[in-house]
Length: 459
Ligand code: BGP
Picture 1 (tube, helix red, strand yellow):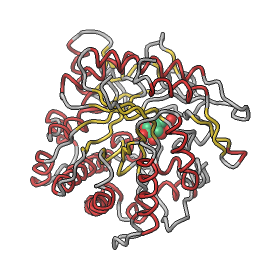
Picture 2 (cartoon, rainbow, N blue to C red):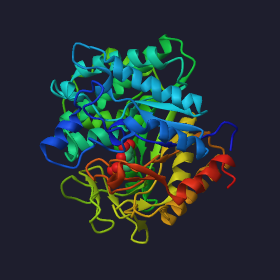
Picture 3 (cartoon, rainbow, N blue to C red):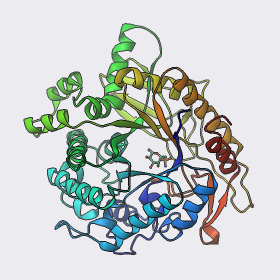
Picture 4 (cartoon, helix red, strand yellow):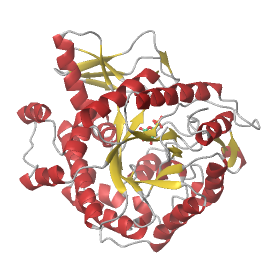
């Protein structure tokens, strides 16, 4: 792998920090939604808010070169008037400084889903006002941390956030409304472009990108019908983010179809120009699984994600009426949470993205969850090691085939709160013992990954 390849691990503020009402943090829409529905929440999470020094020490000892984390907007800006919270600002200086002192490159996500509740109250991402608020946030974080941080991403997974919150309705704000889904998607991509402009205008030394929940598209056969369905699926899963962020263009065939049924009059000419002029330097791809596609065969749209840990395998279902159907290969292996395990999808997916866009790629999330007994001294997570080994191998092969991959981040650094699934869906290289004050216990995979990092992927 290239020199300075960023071997690292990743977290997100709401999922690991805890300290939800400390240090002047105001509630996010996740706090409100989970508290109101009496669901397991991230009030404590991995207690990273108090134990970040220990976590960064473990990263250093584990040979990590980089740490991907996000900034909690509710810690930084307290209200609609834009009042800054100095304690929150200082907290991220502390994390960044601790990383730099330990030789760990910070890789910072500006927004990983924890929208302040005061912004949700005015319409959340369906409101143009939130784009302006995001610009204020971007200005703040670039001016505070811009000299120290080289790698920035504007958003984590707009597709997953928007579809789950506005179409499937399993995440807050919990609605099912296609018009709102389109508006929220658009405004996030507009905010992405605006933040890039702010960053470039400040002449900072680093790079800025976006993180996408990547579903490389595979077809069930080579027929024309399947190819058309694959194009529709690619628009649905990938293109509206990647084409827009990288080429500055919304996929026109997608817009044409949407325009027949929905109201796109909220899109202004200036917005399209902003998107065209302000594109990313790199892409971050989060890879968990591919999408295997066949032509639409009838019936209503179904977006079912059996992400509960108790579902039968391969029963998640995505059918978009008149567009495509997603199917599962019955021979595939699935995780307990119904995610297909398919490392070849990462290899081919990276090459597809490389061929289409030709810009640097970071694999910003990849990992596997399991139920684990963490009362033992060292969890023997063989399944995770096999999973990671096969996916890292896929990246190495993609690089050998010509792709420009510059970093790899395992999800996740330590066990943390999984959105709606709770804390027993464990992804970490380091176990968190919730019964013992969130004590940290590195798993076997942590020591295995140390060798990967230290040998630059030679293993
Ligand atoms: C990605 C998110 C992460 C993380 C991961 C695992 O989509 O960016 O925040 O949660 O998926 O997903 P889950 O926790 O649902 O298993």
